[in-house]
Amino acid sequence: MVQCSMVEEGANFLLLCAIFAMSIYLLWQHFNPPGLPPGPAGFPGIGVLPSLGPTPYKTLMELSKTYGDVMSLRLGPSLVVVLTGRRAMTEALVKKADVFSDRPPMGLLNLVHKGRGLMVAKYGPKVHGFRTLLLGTFRRLGVSTPRVDGLLRPELAALVAAMDQQAGQPTDPKALLSVSASNMICTLAFGKRFDYDDVNFQKFLGKLHNIFEISSSPLGFLILHIPAIVNLPISAIKDTISDCNFMLDFLRAIVDERWLALEARRRSEPNISEWEEPSDLLDGYLRKIGGEDAVGMSVSKEDIAHHFLDLFTAGTESVSHFLQWELLYLTTHPEVQAKVREELDRVVGRARLPSVSDRANLPYMRALIDEVHRMSSFSPLGIPRMTAHIVDIDGYIIPKETMVLTSVWDLHKDPDKWQNPDSFDPSRFLLSNGQVNESKLRQLQAFGLGHRSCVGRQFAESSVFLYTAFLLQRFFFKSPEGAPPPSLAEDPGVFLTPKPFKVCAVRCNSE
Ligand code: HEM
Image (cartoon, rainbow, N blue to C red; front, top):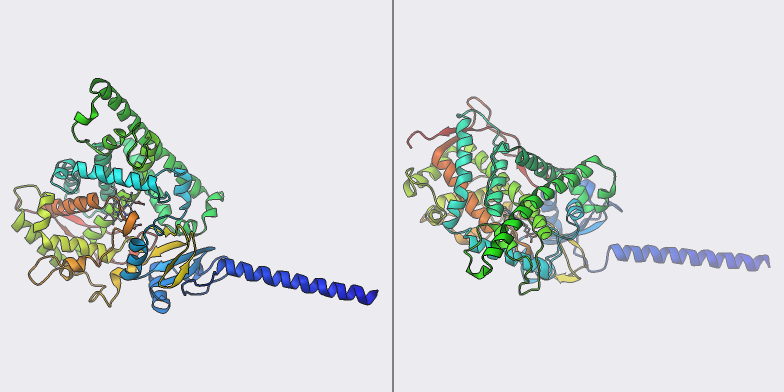
């Protein structure tokens, strides 16, 4: 009897061991399915997060030299695939766009949008329809044509006046550029700008800034890879959600006011097809309410508020970051500044205002703008994507719902593609005849690729061009007298900003 129960216990023990071993194997299989792209091993639960260091984009660039253009690793519990190099990015984001166009859950923004909005929504007919509506309205507003000059000039004039008030004294340009970039989005969205000292607008900007700070901070990085963190009682998270809700209320109020005006107009002029082109984005969106377009998409006032929140979060800081980097490079490279102003003086002069139609005749200025994009690479890993279903790339298997990062940093800094990649040299984008080298430009990827590429790109390009031309037509930018040269190193984060610096905007004397 005793012998029999010992045999039974032994068998049970073996069975338990077998079940345990099988569970471990299945778990391992679940987390490391066969055929994954190669990559560094990490620690259970946290993956390689601790070894990424303060500049993950640089660490990932180094790792890709060992593991290749398609690399997999774990950041926190989530499986992440990192694409490096244009070939791998085009293969995934363009050729297999239907699989690579979702966004992973982005903690805070998902909580705020609750399924609405554009930037964090899953790709499908609704996002496609909204992007089509947005791009169509941009076209009707003429954002890449001289029609946009008139729309943007009041804000450019206000920025120039604010810089004049500084009277050439050393000033950190960050706050001013941020309020101005935000006003550009207001102009585009609602056809109006706010005074820089408007109390409500200041409050709105403060909230926008807070959202950006937390998204770009290490906490933002952690939330992206361990979304459950948003449920922890962390005051910064609660504050950000309430900031987003404040911004939504601000936008809802504007949408409601304009909706009432539109309804009144509809009553007096019922035939909308006879109306003139929309005056701003909101006008274009509101005219769609109640109707359905080809993809069966209807628009509500609430959709509009959520979309506009995305336009502000995506559009304000990107343009403001760009301009901060541009001023920093112009200040530290006076020879480049002199060259771009010489071209501007020759082509536009000082007697008339620059127009987007001048862009084609200012190759050096275009090259300057592209070199600022390359050097700053302020979104060094793009905005994350997620696979919609299982897919193969280069013979590797990438499971459904895998986060995908694009190594923009590597693309812009690879010494095999760029001579002296760390030196600021706009002429790298020019041919020997002084014209822009279009094939070199195609190596840049500041605005993403495929179905989820930057929807505001044309507007961003026109505004950045007009800012550059307006400011350089009027001011010399130089470092404060006797101050050490400002650092060109980035403040690391999800989005890269320059370290705080001061600049003197001195009026050009011969106007
Ligand atoms: C210098 C300026 C800008 C840069 C460098 C930039 C860059 C980017 C990048 C890299 C993405 C992600 C693309 C991808 O996933 O492939 C993006 C998305 C986006 N951008 Fe921009 N952007 C700029 C300005 C703007 C402006 C001014 C607006 C609004 C008017 C805007 C609106 C958006 C939106 C809504 C998305 C999300 C699109 C989607 O998920 O479908 N951006 N941008």
